[in-house]
Image (cartoon, rainbow, N blue to C red; front, side, top):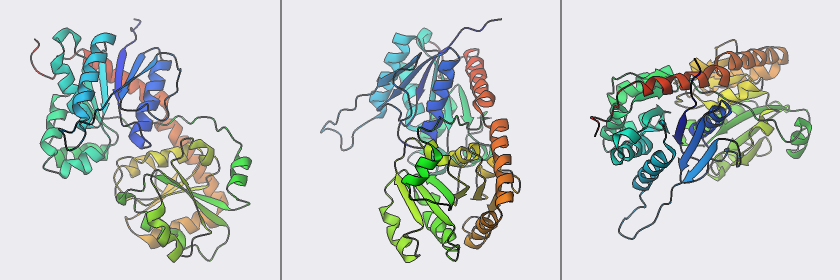
Length: 385
């Protein structure tokens, strides 16, 4: 039986970050499979192509009224969701993060007649559970949004359990891991290395938004354990200004050993020259940057936290250490730095694991199945009008 294509709305944070990258890639993949995809957000997601077939972008206009101390996003977003759902006859609203996106989707559905209400799929990515979920000012709203969603998904088994524990939500949560589709680099590896002033050094790679949970202090302390060697550089792709950490870099005598590039959009250009990934977070729901590195045959050295053990097979595709253990992290880093053959072997295993478990071919059909299953359910938002 031939299944008809779906009309799918997607709302995510459009800025640099794992959830936005995942949501954008998902939309692109769905469109390539024949579905009609509508992105609804305050800005165009930074990796969303301009003129791709079956992909549409609907901006949300936010007015800064003096009546409000802070500009409101949830209400304009909900109105735009309702408009797009009505005009484009959306089947699905797939929202990434429970608040404000799922909250806005619920309000949008309340504005629509029953026959025009799309099913709401809410994907939790971590911050809505681990940060906002611990805030009593947000927890009840998150619980409500999850309860009233038609389907809830999480990007790791760890996050599913944390959502149950922190939010007290005990409804079904389907685990669908992140995936990553690399884009062809626009420059050669040799050109990128030349632009960074690299010669034969081993490149230790890190990419993150530099939030406190990423523990950039631990990252710098870890690479400082390698100061006795001259054959490496740390390439740090920062989604936020690195300036707050500049003093630590100087204190640790790493000024000439750490290369920083801020707000990089084409991460693949730098991933192609990465040799070892280094991630030192206190917690991670999944760690998409780790998967991105694995796709380029780059083994990871990381903390054993959150969903990371679901991504790395310890001792096979990377090495794990306890959170905050600089000595263990530094030891793992030195081991891969000193043993190129083992590093290449782990890198090959990392690439194979990424393809086998976290590719679009594996993950996207699972979302499609969730959408179609949701369409068979009665609306979770309550009785029809």
